[in-house]
Image 1 (cartoon, helix red, strand yellow):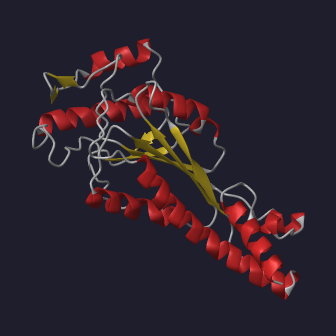
Image 2 (cartoon, rainbow, N blue to C red):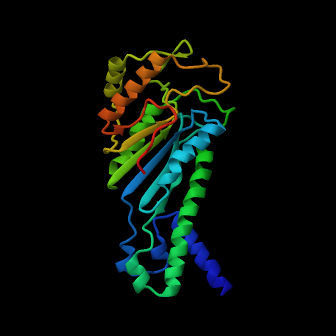
Image 3 (cartoon, rainbow, N blue to C red):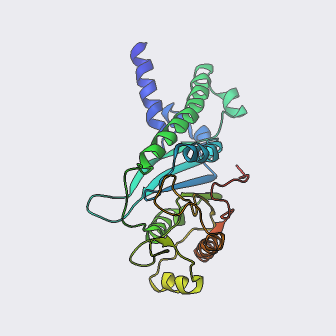
Length: 275
C-alpha cells in the first residue's frame, strides 16, 4: 500500500510540471480527459537587468497569483543580455486544468473521484509554490549589474517563438522590467540619465532593425516601467515628461507588434486586472 501511495504521489507531481494532467495520471478515459484544456495562457517575462526589492516582489506575486485557477496555463521565462556568461532561462510551465465536473462525480468510481479531486487541488498548490520559487530564481540580485538591457530583441524573439503560436482564447503577457532599453540598437540613456525619447525616430530604428514582435492580440501588462532602484546611483525620481514619453513609446511598440497594452502609466500595475 505504501509503495502504491509513493508511486501515485510521484506520478501526480510529474503531472503538475508537464502537459500530462491529473486525469491522464489516473488513466481516465478520453470522455473525461477532454476536460483537460486551458482557455487562458499567461506569459511571465522577467528582465534580469531590473532590480526588484522585497516590496515589489510581493506586489508582483499579488498581481500574478489570481491567475492560478482552473483552465489556465502559466509560463515563466527570464531574459538577459547576450554574453558568454549569461543566457535566457525557461523556468517552466504550469497547467491548471478544469475542476472536478458533475459528470465525473457521477460516472467515476468513488476512489478515483477522491484522488482526482485531491490531485486537482494539489496542482494549484504546486503551481503557487513553483511560480513563487521560479520568480525568485529569475530576479536580479542587488549586487549583480548588467552592462546592457536588451529588451526589444528579447521581446521580439520570445513573442515570435512562443506567444505567436498560442491558440488560447485569452492571452496575457506580464513583463517585469523597468523597460529602459540600453543596447546596440537603442539607448534610452544620455549622460547616465534617462533621456526624453524621440518616439518617431526610435520607432523607425525599431522597424529598420525588424525588432517588432508578434504578440498575437495578447493583453500586455508591465510591472516596473520607469522604475527607479532603491539606493541606486540613478536620480531619485523620474521626470514626469520623460516618464510619459517612455510610456508612449512602449504603447506604440506593443500596438504595432499586435498586442493590447493595458495600464502602462502605472509602474506597479496599481489597477484591477480581469482574472
